[in-house]
View (cartoon, helix red, strand yellow):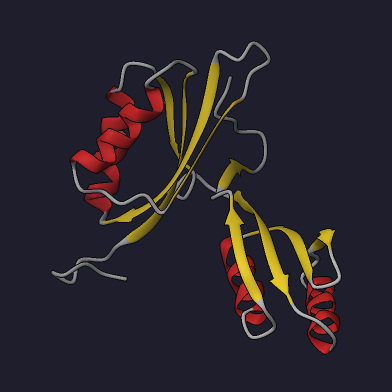
Length: 174
C-alpha cells in the first residue's frame, strides 16, 4: 500500500488510555479530522472499576511520519495518560464483533447454517425466513464470511470496530 507519491503506507492499531470525561472522544476525533487523517475503526469503553479511565482503540493508516505525528499529537492531548502503537510494540490480538442478518428459505438457510458453523458464527436470532449470526474474529474473517453470505441473502451487517490488546505481560494500564 502506498500514497500518491509512492511512499509506503502502513496500518496502525493505536490504543489510547484517557480520562473518562465529556469531550475527550470529540477531541481525539477532532485531531484526526482537523488534519485530514482517516479513521478506519474506532472503539471506546471504560476500562477501570471506578469508571475514571477509558480505552480508545483507533485503527488508521498512513506513512510512517504521519503515524508518528498522530501518536505524538494524541500524547499531547490533556486527558491522555498513555498512547501505545500495538502494531509496532510486539504481538497483539485484534478482534471485532459483528451481527450479520441473512434472509432466505430452503437450501439458502441450510447453506447459511453450514457456513456459519465453518466460521464459528453463532445463531443469536432466528425466524422462519431469517437468521442473525454473531461472529467474532479479525476483520478479514468477518469480511470473508460476509462475502460468502451475499449470494445467500445477506441483508444487514453491524460491526463494533476493532478492539486490541498486547499479548503477554505488557499492559496499557499499570
